[in-house]
Length: 109
Length: 109
DNA sequence: ACCGTAATTCTAGAATTATCGAAATATAAG
DNA sequence: CTTATATTTCGATAATTCTAGAATTACGGT
Image 1 (spheres, each protein chain N blue to C red):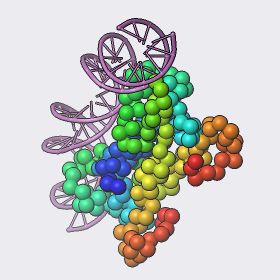
Image 2 (tube, each protein chain N blue to C red):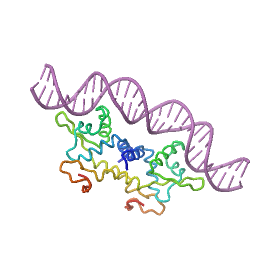
Image 3 (cartoon, rainbow over the protein chains, first blue to last red):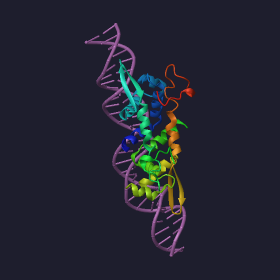
Image 4 (tube, chains in turn blue, purple, brown, green):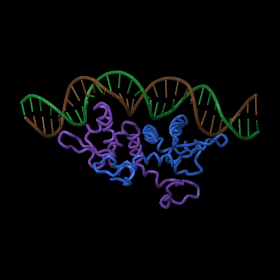
């Protein structure tokens, strides 16, 4: 995963409204929630919600499937996890006398 | 940790330049790096670097200690980890028939 | 075909963020 | 006290992001 992709994903979650949206969807789990379900839990105009949802969709942190007139939203937990894993294997990689990157399995230094 | 705090921290990392700075510091490990050391690895003006560094300092993802005329920077890995842990225990919490939040120890649904 | 509900797109103003040169500050050495 | 190096602050401009009302599209029911 490229640095740009990680940055845009973190940036997508780096806004209170979108973080709330994502949290609501994570808590909703497998069944997901229609857009209206998110809107009823936050009190923001539909256009604003749609704007934020688009950002989360663009970076694949959220997916949607249509069910009649509703769009059911799902948080893609695995995308977030792999985004957060960026540094996991890089900790201390450049420290003097550090083991090679591949063998560095520290949680952290 | 408040939603606002998590959002501002994710937002701080949600920029390619700052993500690079943070990655460089994570890789540098315990000894850390002076500002000039970061600057030599990226090719950006000092004022721009200082601006980004300030954001990372403000949200406590990076710390600095002075050593003579140099400011040695360190990535605070634990702050990042606790930021990323926000959702770990919330997954599926609201799913119908879900176990209570405290007993929900799924990695993910 | 028409209506109602669901959601998005369009548009624009306000607010925030990014970039970087120039000037200022901090610290140490001579 | 002057000089040199390291870094930040100031100030100005460009670019992006946020917010939300109005208009539009999508779908299903009658």
